[in-house]
Length: 341
Image 1 (tube, rainbow, N blue to C red):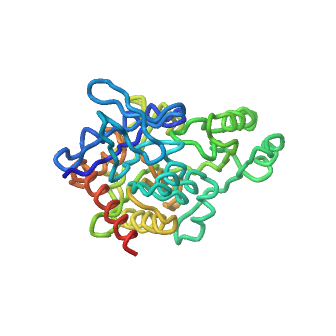
Image 2: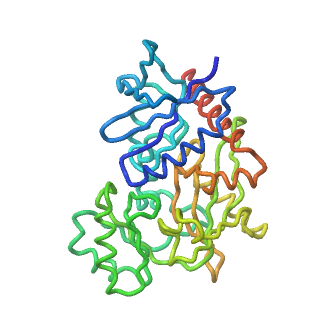
Image 3: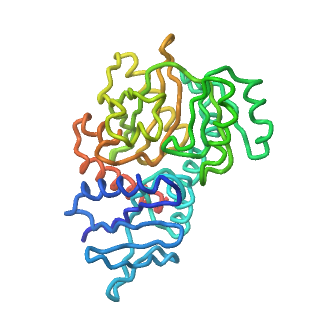
């Protein structure tokens, strides 16, 4: 009997469009000999599945089941490919924990923590040879004094971003102080990001992204790095999703020492944040020093054909089909092991 997979997509933020593209790619690569896949869209007003004939079926939120032709469909696993809330901030994970449905991503606590960029940096402080840019975390109550707080504590240029946002939505690189107020307002006002803003000093260097996952044998596997070179001011939303604006080099040109350093640090990050499944860590190698500066961690990374993780999987010598099977089977094994404890 095939394993029934709920492929979770959609979402409550502007990243929903990316989620649909990611889930469509994952669906096309899943092993249909092993898995019976039901794409489930999670939207604010409705949770639903649409069959091949275009008929829509609502999800029963009591147990996350479907009723199709008088048959109740329940799932063995939720494969979460939903960027932003509620699939990346721990809300959906908490719900699945309560109803007892295993899932592929980090748990509720880790997902909630890593969605908060400022809190994540606080947890990661102290990892050997991991550097963190000086920053100011602004809450809703700081809005009137935000500009002065940043001026008092940081040196230009700055990156200003929603503290709980994704896909670089609401993010600005500030090179002059007269640009700061507008940039902070833009970050505060980004939809569904929690009215918190993170301002960081700019680190000049080469930008990289690198995936990591735990395989079925229980080993942590760090994928080949991708170097990001963009014609934009920084790797913003347009650079990420408009073809031709960014050059992505996979595998990246790293020395043996740089490769070993980033591999070790990324494993430390995965351990310290208690991650599960596949995640992606973005970082700078500072131009003058070669130091590893953490940018952010993505616990539900993009999964289109052009996304970093699929690029890195191919560079690693693995097919996406085999990779996703590893993610699914490891999640199922982890769930079985916990239920037997």
